[in-house]
Image 1 (cartoon, helix red, strand yellow):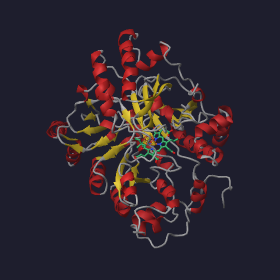
Image 2 (tube, protein in one colour):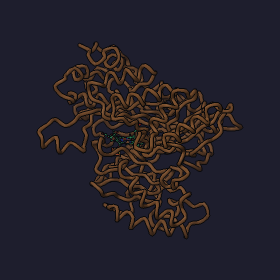
Image 3 (cartoon, protein in one colour):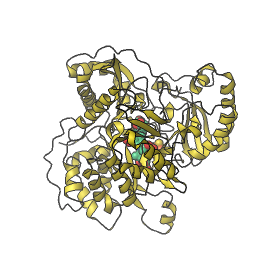
Image 4 (cartoon, protein in one colour):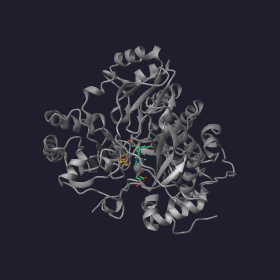
Length: 568
Ligand code: SRM
Ligand code: SF4
């Protein structure tokens, strides 16, 4: 089998890879460089890793005529965001032993390690494997980590829904044995990879045209931003029983500056699926995208472009045909929140849950603040779980009554006690993507800079009595959308070092995107624009009105009603 010549380079690499093997074994054995063979840089994404350089050092190393300092980001899927204390402990330990000492909790409830050297990749993967974690499908043209909102204290239904998220994830995980062969059995010293005998019943030999994302949520919470996903599943309950899911398709946020034919788009509701059908509905949607998605130009390969090209009715008709029945009519629901509830909350069976604020999702130790050490210590005795939220925060879940005081004490001892309530809601609910120094796509800082900007914005917020009012601010270093900035009531998207485009007017619950308001602002410009708006909001808002709704109502920006009018 070969792929048509007009298909993109990555399609050719995939087909030649024999189910994701490529020459990865050879790349790992080559000790002369810290990098992989060029084609393998595409394939390793399917194994959950990106080859990166330390962008802070790139210039200096070039001047010294040295190879860039190559290292690898490794992404470990945590379906539904729930992992055990043992798994937490292992990730923390691996980040110290092989990574840069920090653990990143992503906007999709996964773990990332940064700074892993090529020679340490196999040992790191083996470390995941020993505690039943893996990085396969962390990245690549396959279904990624399946998200699910994580409010264990709210109802037993959440547990059921997390279970369904895990089932969807298992079903859509690639079946190739290449991952085990290369990283675990081969241990980085595999002499030869076997002739592929695998079968990928869902993906086939060339996998999907592009990444694919699924999120679940249980109203009234939309903390997984389901509309930003290729498939969003909205749980519908009746009298405490899960009936099934409303199905939304075609969300995705990436775009490219200067190319208005690329755009962020929210998913459209197309119907209702019963609990027992939902895994199959996801599979069939994935296969339509596999067959219909654009494989010539990766800029237009996501499901959102497939949908806008063929039209929603044709897509839904095809889905019904592949299912052999029609989805039911979408059922009524209402989202009222998309943020995390910080602090202690009672749980089920006498246990409790503690939601901790993790700035930028970065779990680390710094002088006077030892969050990472505190969590590692808690993991030594905690019999519950750890839950990564879609807002880059962490819930220590299902804490035994007998352990509550000890958990609190350890956090305080390390200066990491729950202090979310001392922060403004603006800061508590902020999101920032990784950006520099590891992300190759970043035009500007995000995670490293947003706290500084927030110090200044907090002064304005407090001066206007808005410390407890949640305003969603989201910053990314480029327009790819990793911190879902187009769903920020205030979105800041990096254009060049120190300069950002300012977007305003998303809803507070993830169901309306924002619009471009100003371009190329530096810090002074951002403060100059936002200060009067915050003041006007404090005095002019209607009861319960969110900042995003306020700027739309007062005519500052027009409401974005569909992806195709995002740039209008
Ligand atoms: Fe992302 C690429 C980080 C969530 C849209 N994303 C990247 C890469 C791998 C950069 C690259 O291509 O070289 C970034 C790695 C940086 C690093 O050094 O770690 C990266 N994305 C992240 C994370 C870690 C951001 C964070 O700070 O938490 C998130 C990891 C999620 C996970 O666990 O799987 C992350 N990325 C997202 C989201 C949000 C979401 O899914 O809810 C989006 C927008 C939704 C979407 O997919 O449309 C997102 N990332 C992108 C895109 C644009 C995709 C597109 O369709 O245009 C890229 C670039 C690409 O795919 O070509 C990208
Ligand atoms: Fe990198 Fe851009 Fe994603 Fe930020 S939004 S992590 S800069 S790809």
